[in-house]
Image (cartoon, rainbow, N blue to C red):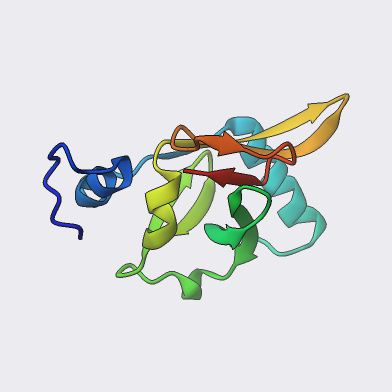
Length: 134
């Protein structure tokens, strides 16, 4: 923890980190949940969890990562488990600092098809949609 206590010298991430463990919010739309279930069925992987994380890299500094993961990899001391629309999502607590309030949707449009992150903390997004900065 930063010890910032919400003073004027605090960054948005400092304040977020202090309040993180009080309430973490991440939303998965019904459309995204349906697509995840479809892929699980197509790949015959059953009810695995979805791991959402943030790593360094990409065009804007950070990138989103999505993958399937067994339930045994969930560690309550290091991870949040979010159940949204019948899908279990695991997010490590470090990544959650950058994902607070994020909505994960699935878009199927003329110019592209895939998962789309809407992150209120992002100050810059790359055109690819998988990279951001805070």
